[in-house]
Length: 120
Image 1 (tube, rainbow, N blue to C red):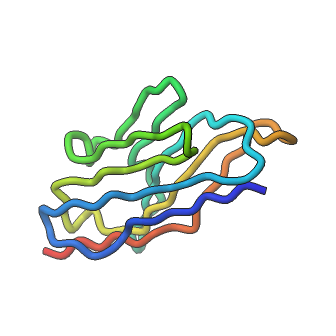
Image 2: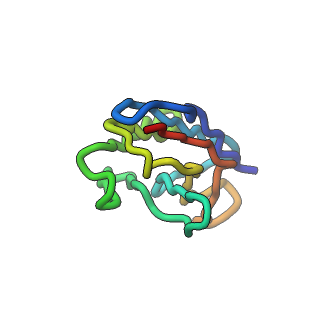
């Protein structure tokens, strides 16, 4: 069984910074892509940033130049460094991983979500 455990959310003033972490655990064989999505009230879940095993990265236009995604493969952990935060970044942030376990082909997994609130 695979678990994605997120941490690092909270309340911050506009212009501030937060770092989110997501650790994957379980019978993991290999991890392909890890990423972060977010969902604001009344809106659809959207991709924020993703990083492959390459690694190559992909960012939403709204966060380019402000957010940085990176991963530590030795810890099966992905991070999202969020700088110059804006009130419109307020959302629940979800970790996502596409990985193989020792028993299964690649599947997609989600974390439980962590709240990020940016005050103006």
